[in-house]
Length: 329
Image (cartoon, rainbow, N blue to C red):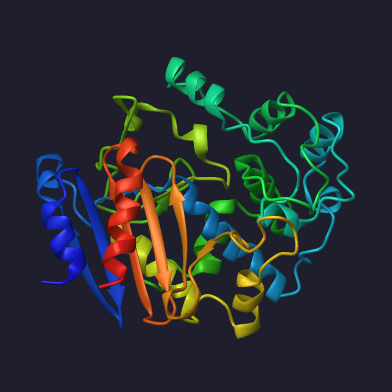
Protein backbone atom coordinates (compact mmCIF):
# COMPACT_ATOMS: atom_id res chain seq x y z
CA UNK A 1 0.00 0.00 0.00
CA UNK A 2 1.39 3.42 -0.96
CA UNK A 3 1.56 6.28 1.50
CA UNK A 4 -1.35 7.99 -0.24
CA UNK A 5 -3.48 4.86 -0.04
CA UNK A 6 -2.66 4.51 3.65
CA UNK A 7 -3.63 8.12 4.33
CA UNK A 8 -6.89 7.75 2.39
CA UNK A 9 -7.79 4.58 4.30
CA UNK A 10 -7.66 6.58 7.55
CA UNK A 11 -9.38 9.71 6.20
CA UNK A 12 -12.78 10.35 7.85
CA UNK A 13 -14.02 12.83 5.22
CA UNK A 14 -15.53 11.79 1.88
CA UNK A 15 -12.74 12.15 -0.68
CA UNK A 16 -11.60 10.57 -3.93
CA UNK A 17 -8.22 11.02 -5.63
CA UNK A 18 -6.62 9.87 -8.85
CA UNK A 19 -2.90 9.22 -9.32
CA UNK A 20 -1.45 9.33 -12.85
CA UNK A 21 2.17 8.27 -13.20
CA UNK A 22 4.04 6.76 -16.15
CA UNK A 23 0.79 6.39 -18.05
CA UNK A 24 -0.85 4.39 -15.25
CA UNK A 25 -4.01 5.73 -13.62
CA UNK A 26 -5.05 4.66 -10.11
CA UNK A 27 -8.17 5.76 -8.26
CA UNK A 28 -8.41 5.83 -4.46
CA UNK A 29 -11.42 6.74 -2.30
CA UNK A 30 -11.80 7.22 1.43
CA UNK A 31 -14.19 4.91 3.31
CA UNK A 32 -16.73 7.72 3.73
CA UNK A 33 -16.83 8.34 -0.03
CA UNK A 34 -18.74 5.10 -0.64
CA UNK A 35 -21.86 6.49 1.03
CA UNK A 36 -21.97 9.29 -1.54
CA UNK A 37 -21.00 7.06 -4.48
CA UNK A 38 -17.91 9.23 -4.84
CA UNK A 39 -14.88 7.80 -6.60
CA UNK A 40 -12.12 8.91 -8.96
CA UNK A 41 -14.47 8.56 -11.94
CA UNK A 42 -17.21 10.81 -10.52
CA UNK A 43 -17.72 13.99 -12.59
CA UNK A 44 -17.60 17.05 -10.31
CA UNK A 45 -17.52 20.82 -10.75
CA UNK A 46 -13.81 21.59 -10.92
CA UNK A 47 -14.35 25.34 -10.35
CA UNK A 48 -11.04 27.22 -10.45
CA UNK A 49 -9.05 24.22 -11.63
CA UNK A 50 -10.54 25.37 -14.95
CA UNK A 51 -8.14 28.33 -14.85
CA UNK A 52 -5.10 26.14 -15.53
CA UNK A 53 -6.68 24.89 -18.76
CA UNK A 54 -7.84 28.34 -19.84
CA UNK A 55 -4.27 29.57 -19.28
CA UNK A 56 -2.86 26.66 -21.31
CA UNK A 57 -5.31 27.52 -24.11
CA UNK A 58 -4.19 31.15 -24.15
CA UNK A 59 -0.56 30.02 -24.20
CA UNK A 60 -1.30 27.73 -27.15
CA UNK A 61 -2.70 30.78 -28.95
CA UNK A 62 0.50 32.67 -28.13
CA UNK A 63 2.50 29.72 -29.43
CA UNK A 64 0.52 29.85 -32.68
CA UNK A 65 1.03 33.61 -33.09
CA UNK A 66 -2.67 34.35 -32.59
CA UNK A 67 -1.99 36.86 -29.82
CA UNK A 68 0.86 38.21 -27.72
CA UNK A 69 0.92 37.80 -23.96
CA UNK A 70 1.84 41.47 -23.66
CA UNK A 71 -1.08 42.66 -25.80
CA UNK A 72 -3.17 45.27 -23.97
CA UNK A 73 -6.53 44.02 -22.81
CA UNK A 74 -8.32 46.92 -24.50
CA UNK A 75 -7.20 45.68 -27.90
CA UNK A 76 -8.28 42.07 -27.30
CA UNK A 77 -11.49 42.03 -25.27
CA UNK A 78 -14.91 42.57 -26.79
CA UNK A 79 -16.07 46.18 -26.96
CA UNK A 80 -18.75 45.80 -24.24
CA UNK A 81 -16.25 44.29 -21.78
CA UNK A 82 -13.62 46.95 -22.52
CA UNK A 83 -16.23 49.67 -21.97
CA UNK A 84 -17.22 48.18 -18.59
CA UNK A 85 -13.57 48.17 -17.50
CA UNK A 86 -13.01 51.76 -18.61
CA UNK A 87 -16.15 52.82 -16.78
CA UNK A 88 -14.74 51.23 -13.63
CA UNK A 89 -11.56 53.27 -13.84
CA UNK A 90 -9.26 50.59 -15.31
CA UNK A 91 -6.67 51.55 -17.91
CA UNK A 92 -7.23 48.85 -20.52
CA UNK A 93 -4.16 50.00 -22.44
CA UNK A 94 -1.84 49.16 -19.52
CA UNK A 95 -3.36 45.87 -18.39
CA UNK A 96 -2.01 42.98 -20.49
CA UNK A 97 -3.03 39.39 -21.12
CA UNK A 98 -0.01 38.31 -19.07
CA UNK A 99 -1.28 40.35 -16.14
CA UNK A 100 -4.63 38.56 -16.30
CA UNK A 101 -2.97 35.14 -16.46
CA UNK A 102 -0.78 35.88 -13.43
CA UNK A 103 -3.48 37.68 -11.40
CA UNK A 104 -1.38 40.84 -11.39
CA UNK A 105 -3.79 43.11 -13.29
CA UNK A 106 -4.89 45.00 -10.17
CA UNK A 107 -8.45 43.77 -10.57
CA UNK A 108 -10.75 43.22 -7.63
CA UNK A 109 -12.50 39.86 -7.45
CA UNK A 110 -16.24 39.81 -8.07
CA UNK A 111 -16.38 36.30 -6.54
CA UNK A 112 -15.89 37.44 -2.95
CA UNK A 113 -17.84 36.58 0.18
CA UNK A 114 -20.71 38.89 -0.74
CA UNK A 115 -21.02 37.10 -4.09
CA UNK A 116 -21.20 33.76 -2.29
CA UNK A 117 -23.95 35.15 -0.07
CA UNK A 118 -25.82 36.25 -3.17
CA UNK A 119 -25.51 32.79 -4.74
CA UNK A 120 -26.87 31.19 -1.59
CA UNK A 121 -29.81 33.62 -1.60
CA UNK A 122 -30.50 33.15 -5.34
CA UNK A 123 -29.11 29.74 -6.33
CA UNK A 124 -31.14 29.64 -9.55
CA UNK A 125 -30.08 33.05 -10.85
CA UNK A 126 -28.75 33.12 -14.41
CA UNK A 127 -25.60 35.23 -14.73
CA UNK A 128 -23.98 36.73 -17.80
CA UNK A 129 -20.29 37.43 -18.25
CA UNK A 130 -21.01 41.15 -18.44
CA UNK A 131 -22.98 41.13 -15.16
CA UNK A 132 -20.08 39.55 -13.31
CA UNK A 133 -17.55 42.01 -14.74
CA UNK A 134 -19.85 44.89 -13.75
CA UNK A 135 -20.07 43.39 -10.27
CA UNK A 136 -16.27 43.57 -10.07
CA UNK A 137 -16.46 47.28 -10.87
CA UNK A 138 -18.66 47.84 -7.81
CA UNK A 139 -15.78 46.62 -5.62
CA UNK A 140 -13.77 49.72 -6.50
CA UNK A 141 -11.20 50.94 -8.99
CA UNK A 142 -7.76 49.42 -9.55
CA UNK A 143 -6.41 47.83 -6.38
CA UNK A 144 -2.78 48.29 -7.44
CA UNK A 145 -1.10 49.35 -10.69
CA UNK A 146 -1.06 46.54 -13.24
CA UNK A 147 1.98 44.29 -13.02
CA UNK A 148 2.98 45.14 -9.46
CA UNK A 149 1.29 42.62 -7.14
CA UNK A 150 -0.47 39.25 -7.16
CA UNK A 151 -4.14 39.56 -6.34
CA UNK A 152 -6.30 36.56 -7.14
CA UNK A 153 -9.27 37.54 -9.29
CA UNK A 154 -11.86 35.30 -10.91
CA UNK A 155 -12.86 38.34 -12.93
CA UNK A 156 -9.49 38.34 -14.68
CA UNK A 157 -10.11 34.85 -16.05
CA UNK A 158 -13.59 35.87 -17.20
CA UNK A 159 -11.79 38.52 -19.26
CA UNK A 160 -9.48 35.84 -20.66
CA UNK A 161 -12.51 33.78 -21.69
CA UNK A 162 -13.87 36.83 -23.49
CA UNK A 163 -10.52 37.40 -25.20
CA UNK A 164 -10.38 33.81 -26.48
CA UNK A 165 -13.88 34.03 -27.92
CA UNK A 166 -13.34 37.50 -29.41
CA UNK A 167 -10.03 36.58 -31.06
CA UNK A 168 -11.13 33.22 -32.51
CA UNK A 169 -14.86 33.73 -32.97
CA UNK A 170 -15.61 30.40 -31.31
CA UNK A 171 -17.15 29.42 -27.95
CA UNK A 172 -14.65 29.18 -25.12
CA UNK A 173 -15.63 25.59 -24.37
CA UNK A 174 -14.87 24.33 -27.87
CA UNK A 175 -11.55 26.20 -28.04
CA UNK A 176 -10.34 24.80 -24.71
CA UNK A 177 -11.42 21.30 -25.73
CA UNK A 178 -9.52 21.55 -29.02
CA UNK A 179 -6.35 23.23 -27.71
CA UNK A 180 -6.10 20.99 -24.66
CA UNK A 181 -6.85 17.93 -26.79
CA UNK A 182 -9.47 16.59 -24.38
CA UNK A 183 -10.79 14.08 -26.90
CA UNK A 184 -7.33 12.82 -27.90
CA UNK A 185 -6.46 12.44 -24.21
CA UNK A 186 -9.51 10.21 -23.74
CA UNK A 187 -11.13 12.43 -21.13
CA UNK A 188 -14.50 10.69 -21.10
CA UNK A 189 -15.94 12.48 -18.04
CA UNK A 190 -15.07 16.06 -18.98
CA UNK A 191 -17.31 18.78 -20.39
CA UNK A 192 -17.99 22.48 -20.02
CA UNK A 193 -21.21 22.73 -18.08
CA UNK A 194 -24.08 24.54 -19.85
CA UNK A 195 -21.86 25.11 -22.91
CA UNK A 196 -21.40 21.51 -24.04
CA UNK A 197 -23.52 18.39 -23.76
CA UNK A 198 -22.35 15.84 -21.24
CA UNK A 199 -20.70 12.77 -22.80
CA UNK A 200 -23.07 9.92 -23.55
CA UNK A 201 -24.03 8.04 -20.43
CA UNK A 202 -22.31 10.55 -18.12
CA UNK A 203 -23.94 13.01 -15.74
CA UNK A 204 -22.98 15.42 -12.98
CA UNK A 205 -23.73 13.12 -10.05
CA UNK A 206 -20.86 13.85 -7.66
CA UNK A 207 -22.24 15.91 -4.79
CA UNK A 208 -20.37 18.93 -3.40
CA UNK A 209 -21.60 20.91 -0.41
CA UNK A 210 -20.96 24.46 0.80
CA UNK A 211 -22.45 25.74 4.06
CA UNK A 212 -24.59 22.59 4.02
CA UNK A 213 -26.05 23.55 0.63
CA UNK A 214 -25.81 21.18 -2.33
CA UNK A 215 -23.79 22.96 -5.04
CA UNK A 216 -25.64 20.85 -7.61
CA UNK A 217 -28.65 23.12 -7.07
CA UNK A 218 -26.68 26.26 -7.98
CA UNK A 219 -27.09 27.49 -11.56
CA UNK A 220 -23.82 26.82 -13.44
CA UNK A 221 -23.61 30.41 -14.71
CA UNK A 222 -22.42 31.45 -11.26
CA UNK A 223 -18.96 30.16 -12.30
CA UNK A 224 -18.91 29.46 -16.02
CA UNK A 225 -17.00 31.94 -18.12
CA UNK A 226 -13.32 31.07 -17.63
CA UNK A 227 -12.72 31.32 -13.91
CA UNK A 228 -14.58 28.00 -13.72
CA UNK A 229 -16.94 25.95 -15.83
CA UNK A 230 -15.37 22.55 -16.44
CA UNK A 231 -16.90 19.39 -15.02
CA UNK A 232 -14.22 16.71 -14.65
CA UNK A 233 -13.62 13.55 -12.69
CA UNK A 234 -10.48 13.32 -10.56
CA UNK A 235 -9.12 10.83 -13.11
CA UNK A 236 -9.58 13.24 -16.01
CA UNK A 237 -8.26 16.15 -13.97
CA UNK A 238 -5.05 14.25 -13.16
CA UNK A 239 -4.58 13.22 -16.81
CA UNK A 240 -5.20 16.74 -18.13
CA UNK A 241 -2.78 18.25 -15.63
CA UNK A 242 -0.09 15.77 -16.69
CA UNK A 243 -0.72 16.47 -20.38
CA UNK A 244 0.34 20.11 -19.98
CA UNK A 245 3.64 19.21 -18.35
CA UNK A 246 4.45 16.16 -20.45
CA UNK A 247 4.31 17.65 -23.92
CA UNK A 248 0.83 16.64 -25.02
CA UNK A 249 -0.65 20.16 -25.21
CA UNK A 250 2.08 22.54 -26.40
CA UNK A 251 4.13 22.04 -29.53
CA UNK A 252 7.26 23.66 -28.09
CA UNK A 253 9.00 23.21 -24.73
CA UNK A 254 9.48 26.96 -24.62
CA UNK A 255 5.73 27.43 -24.23
CA UNK A 256 5.65 25.44 -21.01
CA UNK A 257 8.71 27.38 -19.83
CA UNK A 258 6.80 30.61 -20.45
CA UNK A 259 3.85 29.29 -18.45
CA UNK A 260 6.07 28.40 -15.50
CA UNK A 261 8.38 31.43 -15.55
CA UNK A 262 8.19 33.49 -12.32
CA UNK A 263 6.87 37.01 -12.71
CA UNK A 264 8.81 40.03 -11.47
CA UNK A 265 5.82 41.39 -9.53
CA UNK A 266 5.19 40.78 -5.82
CA UNK A 267 3.96 37.19 -5.47
CA UNK A 268 5.12 36.31 -8.98
CA UNK A 269 7.14 33.34 -7.76
CA UNK A 270 4.14 31.73 -6.09
CA UNK A 271 1.64 31.96 -8.95
CA UNK A 272 2.88 31.66 -12.53
CA UNK A 273 0.50 31.71 -15.55
CA UNK A 274 -2.53 29.70 -14.44
CA UNK A 275 -0.80 27.58 -11.83
CA UNK A 276 0.65 27.89 -8.32
CA UNK A 277 4.25 26.85 -7.64
CA UNK A 278 5.64 25.42 -4.39
CA UNK A 279 8.77 23.68 -3.13
CA UNK A 280 12.13 23.47 -4.81
CA UNK A 281 14.55 20.91 -6.23
CA UNK A 282 13.15 17.39 -6.27
CA UNK A 283 10.29 18.52 -4.05
CA UNK A 284 9.03 21.16 -6.48
CA UNK A 285 5.40 20.89 -7.57
CA UNK A 286 2.77 22.91 -9.40
CA UNK A 287 -0.88 22.98 -8.42
CA UNK A 288 -4.29 24.60 -8.46
CA UNK A 289 -7.44 24.29 -6.41
CA UNK A 290 -11.16 24.77 -7.02
CA UNK A 291 -13.50 26.45 -4.59
CA UNK A 292 -16.03 23.66 -4.11
CA UNK A 293 -13.37 21.16 -3.01
CA UNK A 294 -10.99 20.15 -5.80
CA UNK A 295 -7.21 20.10 -6.09
CA UNK A 296 -4.74 19.09 -8.80
CA UNK A 297 -0.96 18.68 -8.49
CA UNK A 298 1.97 17.86 -10.74
CA UNK A 299 5.47 16.95 -9.54
CA UNK A 300 7.92 17.20 -12.46
CA UNK A 301 10.77 15.24 -10.89
CA UNK A 302 8.62 12.13 -10.59
CA UNK A 303 6.30 12.79 -13.51
CA UNK A 304 3.51 12.43 -10.97
CA UNK A 305 0.03 13.92 -11.30
CA UNK A 306 -2.50 13.71 -8.45
CA UNK A 307 -5.98 15.20 -8.43
CA UNK A 308 -8.89 14.88 -6.06
CA UNK A 309 -12.25 16.04 -4.79
CA UNK A 310 -13.86 16.22 -1.40
CA UNK A 311 -17.60 16.39 -1.02
CA UNK A 312 -17.51 19.35 1.37
CA UNK A 313 -15.83 22.70 0.78
CA UNK A 314 -14.72 22.81 4.40
CA UNK A 315 -12.57 19.70 3.89
CA UNK A 316 -10.56 21.09 0.97
CA UNK A 317 -7.54 21.99 3.12
CA UNK A 318 -7.55 18.40 4.43
CA UNK A 319 -7.56 17.12 0.85
CA UNK A 320 -4.62 19.35 -0.08
CA UNK A 321 -2.61 18.24 2.94
CA UNK A 322 -3.41 14.59 2.24
CA UNK A 323 -2.25 14.86 -1.38
CA UNK A 324 0.90 16.81 -0.51
CA UNK A 325 1.84 14.32 2.20
CA UNK A 326 1.04 11.41 -0.09
CA UNK A 327 3.18 12.79 -2.90
CA UNK A 328 6.19 12.69 -0.63
CA UNK A 329 5.81 8.93 -0.16
